[in-house]
Structures are given as C-alpha cells and as structure tokens.
Image (cartoon, each protein chain N blue to C red):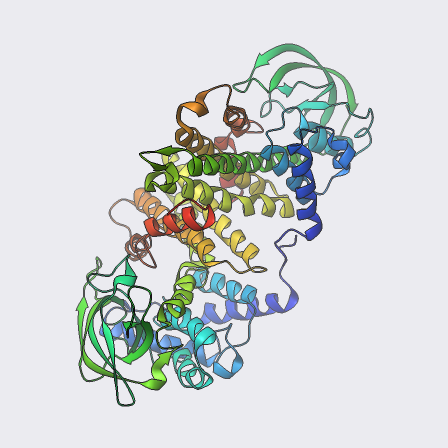
Length: 363
Length: 276
C-alpha cells in the first residue's frame, strides 16, 4: 500500500493551487440570473486553462488527467474556496452517460460546449408523482417525423431556472415502470417549454418545475437505445451517488474550516463532533483512494452517498452550533448540506439498496 | 498511489481465516510471529478480531516485538508476552512474561493482582516493575502499533457481528417472513455496514503513515463502528443473542473491552485534535 503522489500529479497539484490562488473570487449565488452568468464566466475561465473538465480527453477540452489527479484537483478547488460549479449537472451526470452510451456525434457536439459552459445543463428526472419511485414517471415522448414530442411535467429540476438545456427520462412505451423509458435531451427554450422557477430554502430558485407541451426533440438527441433509458440513466445515477458529483475535497475542506472555527471558538462540549467531522472527511478521502483501483459498483456508491451526505450535515450543524445564529460563511453550505440526504436518491432508498444488494436481505 | 491490498495480502487473510475457523490457534505455525510491517499486521489482526481470538496477541505479536527490536520476539516459542503503558494502558493481559514501560525505559514486571475485565475472556493483571530490560526503546511507536492492531481487531469483530446478524436476519422468520425483510432491520444493518466500510480505510491509511494522528483516528472510528455493530447485532438477534449459549456474546464483550483498551475514544479524539 502506498499513499504517495507521483511526480506528475505533484506538478499538476502545484499548478492548480497556484492558478486558483490568483484567480478565485467570490461570486453571487448561481441561483440568480446575474449570479448564473457570473458562474458561467468563471466556468469559461476554468475552461480556458483546461481546468473545467480535467479528466476528459483533450479533444473535448480536458487534460486526460487520471482519476487521482481529478481528486487532487477537487481537493485544491474546494480548499481554495472556489465557487460552486454551475455546470455540474452536465459535467458529472450527463457527460459520464455520454461517454458510456452516447454516439461519437453526440460527444463531439455536446461535450466541448459543456466544458466551456456555452451550454449549461439541468437535470429533469423527478415528476410530481415520481420522486423516490422514479420508475413510476409519466411524462411521454411520442414519435413524430424526425424525432419525438415531449409531453408532461418534470419537477425539482436543479439549475432549470436559468440553464440552457436539460436531460431526462420519458415514457416511449411499450411496457411499464422500468421498461419503455428513453433518455432524451431537450432545449429549455424550445417552443412548448414552460419553466416555473421554485425558490429553495435560501430564497433563490435553485430548481424549477418544467412543463412540456409537445416539445420537439430531434432523433440525434436520444441517448442510448429507444426503450433502454432506465439502464442508461442508472449509469448517471451511480455517478451522482458516487465519487464524481461529491468528491472528498468538498468535505475535507469544510472539515478543515470547522477545525479552524473550533480553534477560535473552543467549546469543549462540541469537541467530539469537531474531531469526528474531520475523521469522517478523512475516511471518505481514503475510501475514495481505495476505489481508484476498482471503481465502486452501483450499490457500493449507495454506501458513500449516505456517508458523505450525513457527514456534510454533521460538519455544518456543528459549525452552526459553535457560531450561533450569526453564521457568516456557513449558512449557504449548511442549507445546501440539508438537501444531501434527499437528492440523488433519498438515504432511505440507499439503505434499502445496501441491505438488499450488498447484504442480500430479502426484498 | 496504490491504496489496495496486494493479492499476497488478501491470500494471507484468507489462509488465516480458514486456519482460525478450523479452531486452530498456533499462529506461529503460519509465520505470523515474523510479521512486522504495519499493513501486514492489520491484515493479521482483522482476522484475529473476525474470530474473536482471545489472549495477549496485540502485545505478543505487535507491541513487545517493536519494543525489543525483534531480539527477544521469538525467544521462547509459543510464550506469550504482555506489557502495560501506564497511565494509558494501566493493566496487562495475562501472559507468560510481563513488561512495563516507564517513559522510554522497558522493565521486566511481575503480576501483583488479577483484575476483572468487562470481557471475562480478557484476564487482566496489575504489574509491579522489576529490573530494567532496555532503555531508549521506541515506546511511542510500540504504543501506536498497539492502537493500530487493536483498531484492526475491532474492525474484524464488527465484520463478524455484521455477518452473524445478516445470516440471522435472513433465516429468522416472524409475521410469516424473514425479519430481514422489514425495513427497520434493513436500515440497522445498512448503518453497520456503512460504519465499518468507512472505518476500514482509516485503519489501512494509519498503517501506511504510522503517525499518531492517523492511528488515533482509526481507533476512534473502529471503536464506534464495531460497538454500533455489537448493539445492532444484539438488537436484531433478540433474546437468543443475550444468552451465554450464543456465540454473539463473545464478540460483543470483546468489542466493549477493546473499545477502551489502548486508550479510550476520548483520549484518541484529543490526540487527533492536538495534531490538527
């Protein structure tokens, strides 16, 4: 066993650290119209240094970085206090799906514009009656000349209030539940689309309802085979739960900030929680290093999803307990942490997956 | 960076598992007394915990050899050694030969009184210092090896209890179905798995770095994860798990004792915070 970084990774780390140190600046909330555009500019600035998607092939704007280098990038990114990634739905959810199931034409058309944030993607999974039970979704795509017509309603669509395009699952039939679904991409400004922004706990519209009334999708925006959408989407869901969307860097950075906060506001009654937050972040970091050699299976990603989401809440709750109700620099992160146990499949669903698929308990 | 066990290490763990499952105890016959690498020691002690092997193994196989620089490690074949590090490790586990650490000085020691552990399989003794055996011994590293192997043992104990309980939940039926079909039971066991799965890399990470902060973090996490495993195991087994006839008790009691052996969770949290 060996935890050391090789020379090229150390060089890369130094480059990233020094670039971030001179370029990171505070931005307004990405869930406002102006803040969204500030974040888009920030993504373009990252892209101009080929730092927006380091692990992608160079042809699409990346650096062909190893998974380890990507983790190192993430650690540096979060430690520097750099802004949240407005493109994250596309980069961490749609792109891995395109790498696995897309066509060469789709990758060439979609990925470079995603890397530069010329197109920012929203996700469109949930529906009013299909949350944890996603397979009960009812929005349809009906065959038409040269493509499909979308009808129905999506909700809790992250970034949809200001994003350009969206990806989601639609019922193309025949079959019920997991069968007869197709993974489709659509334009949020196409005729027939109505977006109703929904304010989140912080008061800003971080997600939206999307109403679809005969929205045209050309054939080239079908990802994977028609009717195979569930399998295609689940590869994305694994990414959302696994290390790609929430890399350890976010938690090691927050835990370090918490330790600093404790040094300034030492409250012995909260000592154990502070230490446990740091240990938890370290555990997730090392667990991820262990997964570099053998990527996590879907159910194994459920283990880390429960762990990091509850760790995130614990870190932020402890900070608020140390600070009291005036908690500058922690409120946004705290509010965001509260959504972790819900999104990407609730932790109750994840625990069912762990019990049934890793421990083999009966359904 | 290569943070996974080699195939030799996983094979060795499998050999140990089969050996201990067959009820054999002479670990020296497998060459275990020659293991000194911390990662290899973790592999050994995870299996020791997995089978709830009792006795002064941490002391005989990891701590005393580190203190003696291997000189006396294999002295009398089969002889067990034990050592106290007052005040953190005030007592020794019953053995053939005793030592006591005072700063960086290693003393021979004699037992003065027997003490009752919360785990009756751990027979403890108070020690009185005797002649000096060596000065300038690597006491700090030896202590950390004790903490590390104790963490590995807790990890193995936790795994064993999760396995026992999963099997029980699949076979025990109530209300006409296996209790493992009830979501309350599923979520309990999922929590145990999560705790152990995320404690494990801390143990191996500490074995790689061998710094006190990482060793203490591993002890905190494995103490909590293994004790959670014990409580859930008892709850899911119900009354049968509370009997002396059932094997669960052996694992549960040893876990409770090891949770505070080689430094309490509170002491180790303090050590982590101090190092940060």
